[in-house]
Amino acid sequence: MIKKWLLALTFLTFPCLAWAETGHQAVAASALTGTFWGITALVIFVLAYSLVPLENNIHLRKSKPVLLAAGLIWVLVAVCYTRMGDTHTAHEALKHSLLEYAELFLFLLAAMTYINAMEERNVFQTLRAFLVSRGFSLQKIFWITGLLAFFISPIADNLTTALLMGAVVMAVGGQNKRFIALACINIVVAANAGGAFSPFGDITTLMVWQAGKIEFTEFFRIFVPSVINWLVPAACMSIAIGKASPEQLNETIRMKYGAKIMMGLFLLTIVTAVSFHNFLHLPPAAGMMLGLGYLGAFSYHVKRHEGRVTSYDRILGAKFNQPLEAIVAPSRKENAITKIIENQTHAAFAIDTNHKITHWNKAMEELTGVSAAKRVGTSEQWAPFYEKKRRILADLIVDEMPEEDYDRHYPGRHRTRAETAAACDAADFFPTIGAEGKWLTFSAAPIKDENGQIVGAIEIIREVEEKQREVEHFDLMKKIARAEWDTLLFFYGVILCVGGLSQFGYLSMLSEYAYTGLGATIANTLVGILSAIVDNIPVMFAVLTMDPAMSHGQWLLATLTAGVGGSLLAIGSAAGVALMGTARGTYTFGAHLKWTPVIALGYAASIICHLWLNASLM
Image 1: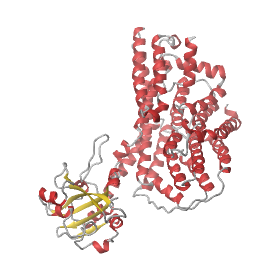
Image 2: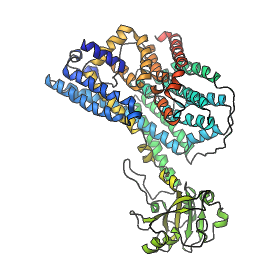
Image 3: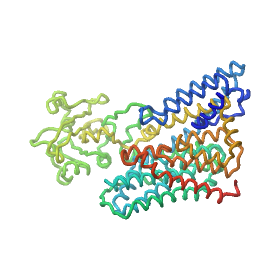
Image 4: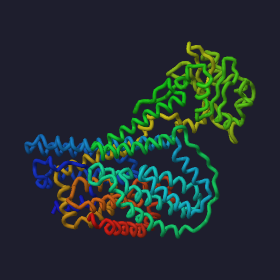
């Protein structure tokens, strides 16, 4: 009786995901499901995974409980097999799970770095600004954002796609909460559906491709079912929007230097990964890491273009507080200094040893309202900030003034950088800047010639809030550091958890019940429904771990349902959870639940379409 209840609990929560090789099991797995070790491992996983959906409520990172559970479960596996005199099976099984995770980790790390790099170069922000400034009707915005979500998701992840399109509908929708809620639902469904027909569109499709169950081109067999999965609920929801037009917004954002080349390199990286898999018969992750090398080489070119050849990108994980002097070229050449000043995202100017302004960038013009033509050649660098002439930070740097002068000009509001005594920071409030005044921070450092002699000074001015957002130059290591490490560690925990459960025989028991007892079509349909309750990644790992004997068409069906099933509920996918956070109070679980029937209609229609369209494969 206890076994039956545990099996039911396992099926409901689907605590399974990892590619643990059943062939390693020297002992019959079915004999271990009822042991103390096996039952304890199952309970540990269920308890740990039950905390994952509560992440936003209890503010506990989802990776933490599963990492703890993974370690404990493999301790139980090792103890169990050692007590039976087998010291080899657990070791080999764990190595296999680690290898599979390593491939997934490296693939995702490269993809996430590219997405972060393109975001930093304003690729996605430019697209958003273009859409919100076109003056489209709400219904057109509904369809455009859905269509873009459907076709961007196969290349970028569904989370990034949902956040990008969600920002568009919230900017356009304004106070129209009904439109925002409907548009967010549409985006979630479209992003999940679009990711289902591409190996790069979702983690589940990536896992299926890397496992060799479906070839790259074969994913497009579920393109039409994926389209139907989105179009059916979208058509129903668009009727409720009406044809009202929002107020046109004026927003212009330009992509930064190198953005288009990075987009091309990302597409080249995808081609490289596919070629590694199809033609060289090597893991796709190796191709993605080669693609990361493309980005690394180009990032050095970007660094040279931004005048930062004298400094290193920070190393992953290292604390970073780059001294201003490190980005100042040790050269008197006019073009070198001009490039540094003009490529600053913040207000910046430079003076020579006579305290004459030599450079005054566009951001400085915007901050002060004074053009470069009126300032360059003068000694009025103080004028935008103070009523009377006085020395400012750059002047003190040029004259190499002692510490007492800094104290006199910025009492209690300055600091000399620990990294280089020549550079200094200061802060003050300026009532004449902006409508209500602003707190500004200043960073100044000397400009030196080849002999180390000071030939001028550069000063960068930031608003306090802007500095807190840590707007920096493009830094490849920083893009790697911004990868979703919580998600990557979560994958590690779950893969190893289920690898351990597989060694106790629970997955083979579940496979026998679901795919032999219920049949592959029903089981794969339930995969999608479970994806709406439990994350689709554990569900697909479970199917791959069980590796049931089923046709090619059934593997395509499992891929489709795992990809789109999460749309049934707002909590069923990362896209839905993310949009609930950004559109808090407007796009809610309840708002999504009201339209679950039409989403379910699209889910059923996509399955029927697949069964008919790919009948020869079933």
